[in-house]
Length: 318
Image (tube, rainbow, N blue to C red; front, side, top):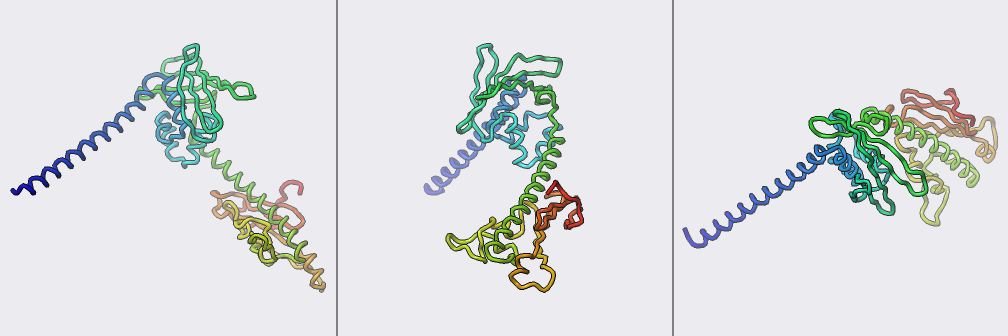
């Protein structure tokens, strides 16, 4: 074997050995990370709760899930990322992810401080009460300009590890919480649809006063180039709404012509309009369909995805 071949073989061997070393180092780091999480859960209920709150502060989805009971972990993994984030925000009372500072109070109990940009929360542990496989940890959370909040976290020993069980007197039931969130999302979308109908009605009235008639479609209500407002681009609603769409709802616009043989100008001024909002995916984007006429009367009902009409029940007093 030539000297050049021997040299190449040595280089390849060294590279392979270096690769093996990197693999072992990475595996060791991952193992150490997992071991630290496992140690935090098994060490004590205070350590587990501190670690869970720290993960919530950082909005670390994966680590936070390790501190939930097996039933809740399964439900938690099915949540969307925004829903997981919403859950963690409730634990530390902060909107943005932050960094955690751990300390000990004068009474010897843990203090978890979560510092986010411009704001922070501090969670001061009290004396832990142990009852067989259950642990209850009282906590005080000082709030600027408000009375301190007091709450007790419940933990349960599961498989040798301490897992979150309750917040206050309420069991942490993520499956039920998911259903509540879904219902809240539906109601929020329905509220947005109603607001969109009212905004369009106002825009249509404004358009008619400005240009003497109703637009043939919703499109002319949309944005206009700077300084170029016109009947084709009146700049009265945003681009999405001018296409007849809003947060999971489709909006239909109909002109109801004035009756009789009226002059064009008078016919244009007395013509009416109807707006109807329908969920794109019934049950997912919303359940109720809505109808609003030019007199401002709002109607709606659960139409199983069908379009609402003037015969549907009235909503509210206007």
